[in-house]
Image 1: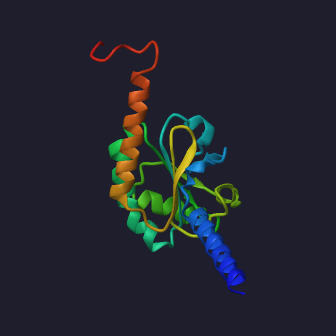
Image 2: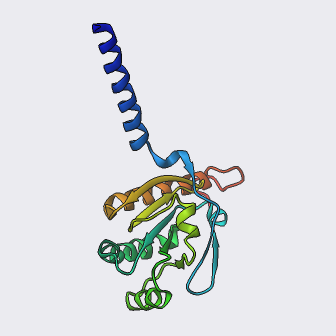
Image 3: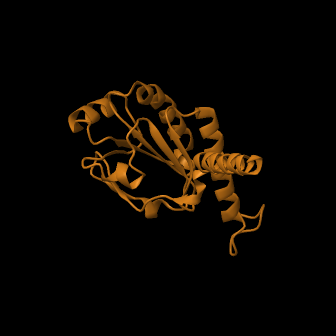
Length: 184
């Protein structure tokens, strides 16, 4: 009987370990969905066309305290790194009234694009997002490298985005046909 009990315990521990690993595994194994965002200004932003740039897609709601708390930090991050190639897209949840979304983005002077997810298709494409804030950091190759439910650690996010931007700049610099370092 001891051997059967030992095997059962080992099996349970192995299953628990695999479950824990899968739960905590990096989201970098997933590709960002090929979706098109329609912004409040009527612009179409296609995820595929944003390849080559780090992108943060953040799902939010006008009634979400964490989302509202995070917004000034996202504005600061976007204003600081947007010209360097960083893109940030805010996605208002399908249950948010469009007039309230427009009112809030105007009131808060959000400089980054805000998309309406009127039918919930964007939330579905990103894995059935239901809680806000939920954010996805996507590397220049189109892989989701961070998936965060809840408020983000902005200092950590800034570091990750800067790292992606530096790697992107280094890759451009080392491409064949690029001027050698120090030459202009």
